[in-house]
Length: 451
Image 1 (cartoon, helix red, strand yellow):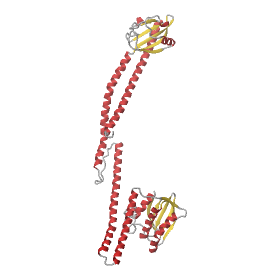
Image 2 (cartoon, rainbow, N blue to C red):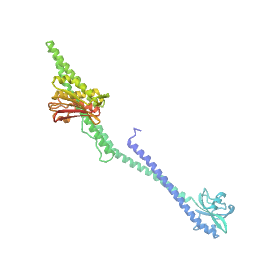
Image 3 (tube, rainbow, N blue to C red):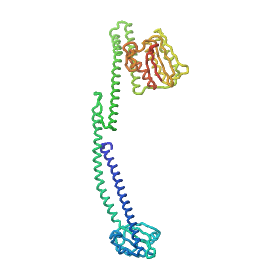
Image 4 (cartoon, rainbow, N blue to C red):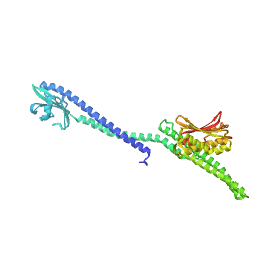
């Protein structure tokens, strides 16, 4: 079924629906006409029975009326049946055989009765009868008035013939029109398909043609163009990420190679060799850290950042971070303090939160001044983990892009590879929170994450 063109499938479904509609319409018209003709015939029989009852009651003769206004020759007939089923009077085409059986005769004596006969003696055609009790010469009898169904059958046959001729013609015309309309509607889809086949990553900015039809096709085209825009933006981000990552990896690799070349070819003493290898080790550590940071950001972009969530006492988490950086703060002659409510619990991944806070503390120690405060605050249903210092803060133009990867300020804060704050933001988003940076007019820089 998948190999059949959608245009053919649409037209086939339309043809089936039209066939059902035309068949139902024809059946309704045929049944309605048959019912109308039956009601009209019953009305005529009632009127004729009323007139002939007066004729029979006045001792008139049905045989003499044959071919007159009340009884048309070859189409209608009448019969008077007395007690015992004996025919007292009848129109000329009829024979002397009673049209009603004993049971039908008894029912007719009680009131008006409609019947149908497959054939009438003397006429040889099906007919509809009306039997009604009458008085004839002071004696009770039954008057039977009837008419052949030939006119009704001819009218229904004529309608049936017209329906059988007009129905297929109307169906073919409808199918042809549906095929043309389906083609015109799908032409826009085919145009978009051909353009989509030509779009490639080497030619950004290309979009699908959108028909100004105001219907589902236009909305589909607009949605696909929006999707192309999102894909282009994501591709540009990935290209930028790869370019920046290559640039950041190039510097430590070049330095590492230079130190190794010096150690191999130019070191004249053990001290020079050890110094070169020490520098190479530092560059290797930098490469390892940079690679780990790049992998973390890539995992975050794919929604695959591994998390082990648990309830963590806020004070315990902050003390662990302070212990890691206490020696750095002491060497710099700066104070590193923590502040957290004793009963405050944080739901999150301990290692990831320590990594985020460690990046913020390291940034504050490297680029800030004065005291560094690591603080946990309860803010409604969320917990804020702040790291602030008493330095000059971030450059004003850097704040809007502080958490963008490889974002580096011209001077002061934000120097380096530009991944530290990006990792903080990735960890915050992995905890369904966010990262925020601002400059406090009194205390300097303040960066925090909400979890």
